[in-house]
Image (cartoon, rainbow, N blue to C red):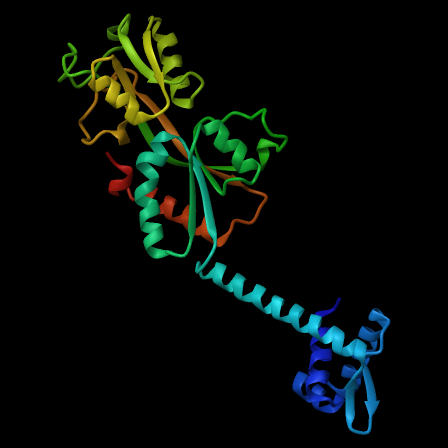
Length: 306
């Protein structure tokens, strides 16, 4: 139904006069009359009686007027809601990522974004890169922080070609050891040093674990994996209790020189931001994406440096 017809109908009902309604709408009287006729034809009902005193609503007109006013009010509310979204006075943002992203990288950025846009609601999910890819493709997440390279998921019918992948942060995995470990106090290690050593690692199948497994296979050593965990803080606690050595992100360490680095073959990875390229981003998602990019480009920013 044409909204112009509804506005014309309401104007005539308010003014009870065709000419005055035309003046209010900045239209000619014949144009207003034509719109009313089209509306009555569409509804199959006569909405006004033309009398010597002006335009008088029929019973059908009085009934329809209630719904026409509601429709126009709803449209105005819709415009207001859209204006609020554009001005980031409302809306929501759903972001997913692995433990490094959700525990260390995102909180400072989210804090800054919340300070600037306090009306936006946040939904943050800690999950694997693969699950974040699935959720972005299925529209459950606005943005996903994933480890490169990504793999085409089997859990969704959505083609991975619909994803836009933007490189974000370079990360390095470092070895942490128990306080009484022979390598405690060292600055670096070689892969051969880990042969037969007890290790606390991320769970099998995770993006970080796959990187470590590839390096172990390349080095031709055997690991004694005594525990597999999902959370970085859990790994750090187990290492501190002497269960074994472990690998964590450089962002999980309190000092830039903390952790042992593999100088000959560093364990590095690239984190990226994933979103649907074929869907219009919400104003909140677009603003947060731009903030993430600005944080990444600011190399001295404390949120992205160890």
